[in-house]
Length: 390
Ligand SMILES: [Zn+2]
Ligand SMILES: [Zn+2]
Image (cartoon, rainbow, N blue to C red; front, top):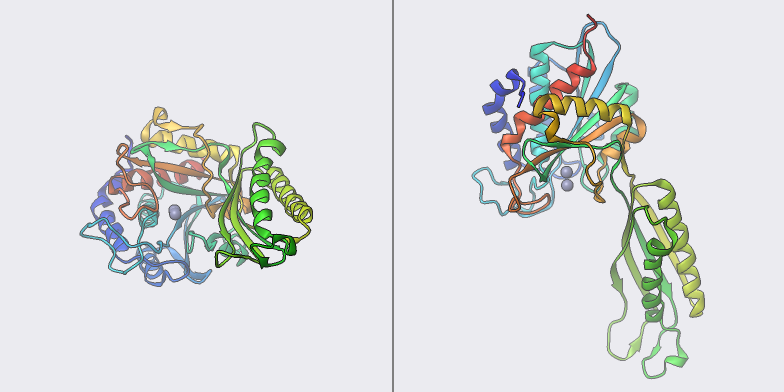
């Protein structure tokens, strides 16, 4: 392991920062104390600090030398609406809110990297340290991009990192191409005609629509997609009816679609529209489909992935860097930054065997032994990407 000495020297202090953030979690767009904590520390390191982007977003800029080269490194600030069950001394003091995804660790690692880079000054160019709000569900990354993140901080490439408890501590994983899925939601409303349950011939039963439509929707992945293309169509809610002997007027289905590729996403949405319309017509009723594309797929570019692999290999050794992990169908709003700029999102292994609690689990706690590894990766990546010309 080749940790950056300036990061190692900070390790105790960084663990303290991480535990402070863990004890004071804030959820989407309400990360005011967290943002102030970050901004204060960046200022103390001598960085230029910009606040207010997407409300609670913070960007610190560190410049050195005369090169125009510039990269962005991104962390996320927000916690989840989960009741913590770790029993840790630094457990959440905010009832019903918890850092169950490790964003406290991400924020700490990026702060540690900023301080080490500011001390070392072994680079030529500028580094934008991007602390975004509301990664969970609310798309704070999208809001930052829409509010001009990359107009104000025009970086050549942007990099992201997430702790990954299902990979071993001290490893990294990343791949060129899609690494995490697109996240879409849908709602189908079918309107039939209510009737007495004993006289179904007098109504048009929307239950029949639901039973046939759910089955037909499952044929999209199996019959319409290329056998090697990945897609998920999952109906997660069915709502209709109140009592034993009444056929209801209406039924509502809701669910989610996950994909890695735009044309697959287009195919699924198009086939869903056809199936919904025509299954409804079969039973002489009408149905509508609301289909909403929430997060795009997280797609790494080849050149930036090579840079990420080189930096990770320099820290943990090439044999602990997996460059072909199985992509994951969960989603990540760093995807919006990757739509705007080339870049790479990596997984930082934090697992210690099968009992390590996974992300979003009420017993999850970011592994502080990963802080120095992740911060060293950031420092190494920035110094390799912005290496001074000899
Ligand atoms: Zn999460
Ligand atoms: Zn997360």
